Image: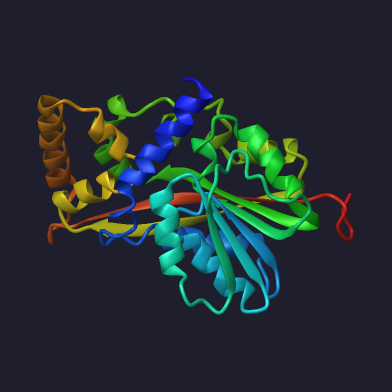
Length: 279
């Protein structure tokens, strides 16, 4: 798939889900973003950048960490997402600015940030290694870069997702094979170190949530990156997938009818060379 085609597809996808993204009663993206900001060590007074800011959930966590003496720049490929991010942080005591821009090539001044994050972004990019190298260059000496990616998920969640997989593009992170950097801690560490970062470390967090019923699960899956699978189905295929989802949910749900699931999230953090005690 050509780079321009990938970029256009990602922009369309996130413009499409912007209204419902992180707004269907499932607490997933906020704890992921909070964990990433904690892992990267954003501190009061830092100048920070949120690469692929989405609707601003990670930017809010960054703004809270850097405080009124710091600043946050958020950028995203999707104009609809940028609009929502700006609205979400309107009135923030922290200096914030949002722009429509491709995280692959952010076009920001080098060595100008203390902290940079990309939450669940890097696997959408046509050239992940090139992008991460550019992100490291945005940091002042000793500045920190943090990326979040998906680790393993619960068997129940995997079973729910199974009918969607045949409709997902090969660029989706859930479709990554074992050779992909997104498939392991070591792969992500190598990606970040290969981009020029030092002191690369990985931590993880398990995020637990629950779906009230199968309709809740469908609303969630249509509000995130999996929306692309639903859009690629014919009417007959959609009917089949919905039937499979109902059957799977009924088999796995607890006595009260809801279905608890979990998702492991990987945080990979590295620093720009040249800081105190660094090489």
